[in-house]
Image 1 (cartoon, rainbow, N blue to C red):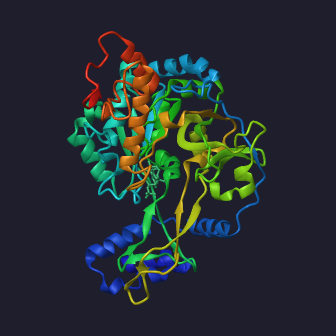
Image 2: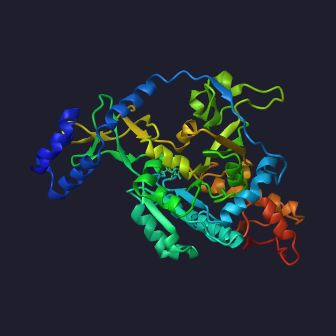
Length: 470
Ligand code: UTP
């Protein structure tokens, strides 16, 4: 069968033949690319996409209630994690010594808001060394290796768009000392977009408008690339999941992992305390008794502002997208053919009109689809949430400017390290040292820096200039 007929046979039964409208005008290579896109499309997903669009218009009725969280034991700087997590730390450390933990870094996003030309992990974030996010995570892993005698394997989820650049970046920097055979890149899937009539959207005469399938694409991508079986074979029971934009997050927090293991959880998560009712963060709570993350937009104003007798917000547990995931649980989902649900978002996207020209819309015109990793929560039998200190563990680089832009993130890091110096008895002030950088291979949080600085010989002599602790 000619290629055109083959593609038609896939598209026509679903009313999507317009995808081939410009076929006669396409070059050989453009035809090949369009054929590749059509052949990877899972047409059975179209109805799932339409359901996601319906849900956007008519959200399900929620019956929300706060869900339990292991809260901080000490809210004063430099903070102390909940006692149950601290008691479980030894269990997490043993799992790290046993090689039963893998680290999973999701880095397949497009980073549109940051606007950096290249994968977000290549962004030079640290103020003195210009260390990139990828190196930050590599150095944190090396430190875990030094502490526990083994460096956990690192799984890096990339997208079709950034896989080449990401691999080249790791190679050019010789994996910053990690063993390349223990770093595994795997590409997430892609999803097409639909217009208001449920028709696939084209971005050019020879290509569909596609995008990565969200961080929740990680479940099917891990399965498709054989990573879950590989983990099971290698004795890895738990995945420590984190995202590329949060340089402050520990890559393998032994207390968090220990808590996850002692509670025999399928999925665990870290949360931070939301103080401002209008903060746009997904909240860990229960809906009809089932623990999950509910988007801020799904709370009524009254619910967002609801307070407990102690004056604190009732729905305070903001998710920071840090998880511990049981490998057996994920394999169980895959074995039962369960994937995470699709979510639709209505966006303004320049798309091709019937004449084959790109048209800028005046209003949202296209539905894009994504899966979210936190949708593993309602599928889990056992879930545990741990509160983490916000300034210690949550400083995501999201935007080009503002508090979550590069300068804002660096400023928050400075404030945090400066407090640690003062706490360690050094005469640090608002402008001295002018810049502080802490090597992620040395210390991960203020408690560790304070301990380090209190040791004889580690006290910096000169606080007038930039301070690089390494
Ligand atoms: P964000 O939700 O911040 O999205 O991703 P993004 O694509 O990086 O940035 P914007 O929205 O275009 O500005 C949070 C984390 O999830 C990963 C990102 O790489 C980041 O670590 N992610 C997101 C994926 O791995 N794949 C995706 O499809 C989406």
